[in-house]
Length: 182
Image (cartoon, rainbow, N blue to C red):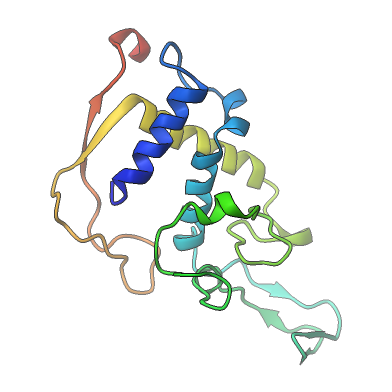
């Protein structure tokens, strides 16, 4: 709702790929490129948690030229990774198109975006979780028009938390024929 142009582009893509005679399905997801870019941008800006589950180094190693002794507890700050100005142009802006121009996956080997962790310690449910988010968002956009209850309210994250200071409230109006909702 904060980015109506992006929502319109996702809706147009769904109508182009799926049509208007059926609901979006899991088999449609590989063809919904802009939807995937939007979800990646959401994960980049608003990871589920600011930090991944703590890791412990299994052996002495060097990371970025720094010595890390065996047994060191490491915290990965996903919030800062997603907003690093050395990696992302306009890091605090919602720009899904950045993921259309360049292929960045959610298990990015360069660790620019790691909402589900990475490597051997990555989330085993990342593929399922991503599919569910894509399908859920696509269905909500396809089936409803969304209008904020308080249109001019600024949506701010609570300090230090990955939640909104005030819960988002919106009206959902059906946009498909009634037989789709049974």
